[in-house]
Length: 119
Length: 107
Image (cartoon, each protein chain N blue to C red):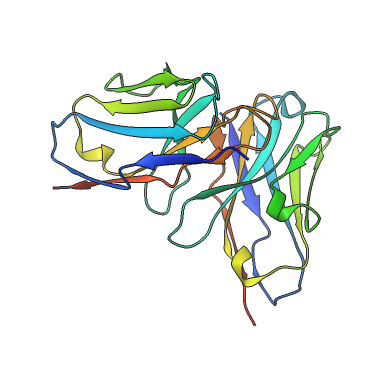
């Protein structure tokens, strides 16, 4: 069974940093791209970033380029999203999702982890 | 960036109704479109990909159509468990974008 479990969400002050993790199981992790999608409270889904199966290619939404960084450790079956210089409007549930390619639909999603940016 | 516009944003319907949600792209995305269902407090669930391919395990009352810039999701006979929010997602390029979401509510 495919499972994606996010962790690392927390309350952080504006300007702070956080690293989110997405632990995967039930499939050949390095054969899939991993994406991050966020959802602000009461709002819609927003695509954040994606990384290819071998980690060689990573892409970001324009508004997050330079502040966020996606990576993966295929030996640990885990993807990461580093969030820097956080702002109040980064407050959201962050989901990881699996895609066959970096430009693909997402067939499995984690349950999400909440990041709250507030002083 | 490619923008996706869904309509309506809220849809009121009854059990047994046939409902259709539309999604329009600002430029052609061929058939690189997916539909997801999301219930409150839960992660999105894939329903349809490549515009019209039903994901394994999804009931056949769900169907998708369209290509280019105009797409639709149809539920042929609305069931109680279908009251949820639906999102379209274009993945022509690696920088995917979602529609605003359509909330299907009980009339």
